[in-house]
Amino acid sequence: MVNTNRPGKKGIKQIPGEKKTAPLFKVALIGCGRIGWMLEDDPLRVKPATHAGGFSNHPKTKITSACDINKTRLHQFGERYGIDSNSLYTDFKDLLKNENPDIVSIATWTEHHCEMVIESAKNKSVKGIYCEKPISLTLKEAERMNAACKKRGIPLVIGHERRFDSNFVKIKNMIDDEVFGKLRTIVAHTLSSQVPKLPVSKFAGGTLFHDGTHLFDLVLYFGGAADYVVGFDERDFGRKYIESTAVGFIKLKNGVNVLFEGGGRRKYFKFDLDMQFERGRILIGNSGIHLFGSKKSRHYTGFFELEPIPYKEPKNRKNAFVVAVDEIVRSIKNGHVPRSNGEEGKNSLELILSIYKSASKGGKKVKIGGKNRG
Image 1 (cartoon, helix red, strand yellow):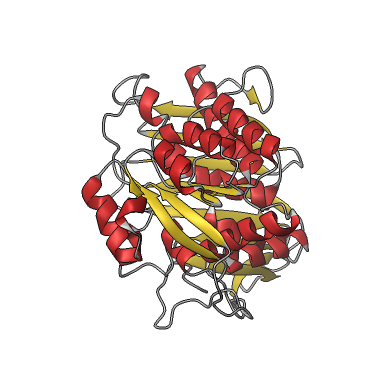
Image 2: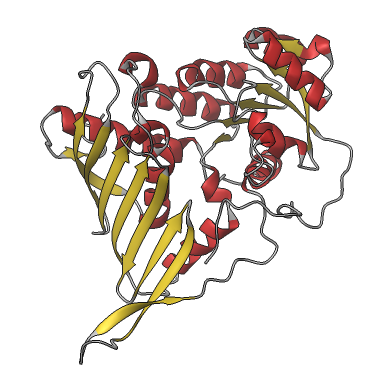
């Protein structure tokens, strides 16, 4: 059993075997808010916990410029990370023009991702982009972002950082190796407090969208490609506003069934995937990792039941944000395909938008990749 969010006295080991050397890649951070850098001050989070934390802890990168429309927050970031005041901007286009960064890290509201990724990709100095999740508000935007990066041949990494966490990678390997046999069912939850009255046009969705993007990315990472979805939602303020809660069903192409619930109306935060296999069960999420194996029942003759078995955390566990940066660096150097890339980001977005589409049609089945997709 392990708590994947617990802090450690010494933190998590960084990329082993590398010493701090002269930085090779100049990084521009666009968006100096919570996920940009401020969560580094959260005493309960494992560090690094942000874009800035990842780049400042990698031996091959250095943050040399930043942008935010909030001048106070921008200068606080500059002081914290030693950025020259002349390299702090309130207009990201001015930053791109004057600073010529090697890597652009985008940690802004989702509505700005598309324009910022495309403009960054146009800049000839930019060799890689790290964009916060969800990738965009619409599939058309995601497709434009991916096309712009492919045209330049530069990697686009999406901030689904659990794909870079050593524990989640270990579970992925266990699934692929069929340690408990074939995966049969996934029950997925992302639940939090009641959502406010926010327009779909600006925010796209509620908990299912902004936290659900992590959840559905893991469904695809662990389970494989999706075939179709059936969804239902409740919108307390009408369909022009984000959902209060959503539930539904996803059929994966390999036959795995996925049941999900996402939304508010809770006085707690819950994020987990309960995966059922032929001979076992894996529960993974913010409450840790729990394994169960099939053993002869102690209660019923001729039956088998699930019993807890110990989980051993990987040795030399690496920080997910630093590994995400390392994926960008490796991609720039040798063409490595990042495990959380623009196409993967688009796939999780399509799942969410297809669920909304199904719900708007009374639970009609929506084929992934079909004409009725989100």
